[in-house]
Image 1 (cartoon, rainbow, N blue to C red):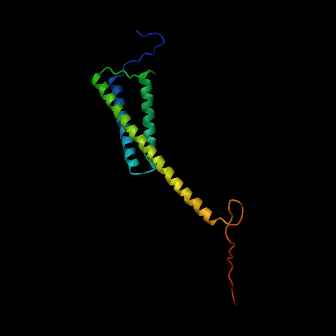
Image 2 (cartoon, rainbow, N blue to C red; image 1 turned 180 degrees about the horizontal axis):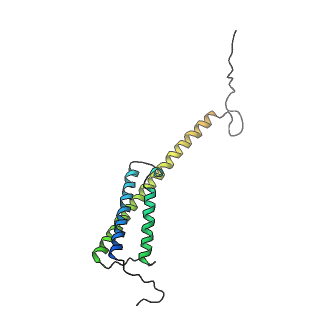
Image 3 (spheres, rainbow, N blue to C red; image 1 turned 60 degrees about the horizontal axis):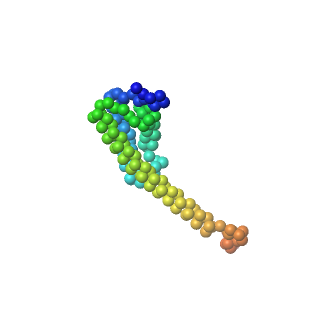
Length: 150
């Protein structure tokens, strides 16, 4: 008998647990594919897996919330199935940890590329500016006229 105020969690059916395992496997495949792309040095913004990963992650989060009833525990009666589900969750966590590390590296690389471009632009503008920061002329006036003799 449940205590008053304590959420009760009904056991997850075998079919539901198998569906969760399949969802986790799909999510792991998408994350692993994204990790391969990130390892190649592609910017995170150009990855094709982002939308699918977000969709699967949202679905997984919703399922976990439904299965735990807010207490953080998924009740699976079949021990082998519970162990298999736990194993997949641990695999997912490892894939997500690697993904997070690779995404951070990709973001840092993008920031370095942006800073290099900005620095080149600043240097080019500074070299071509006819006036300095104080408003004085930094370059001599150059005439672009031509002299024609008839």
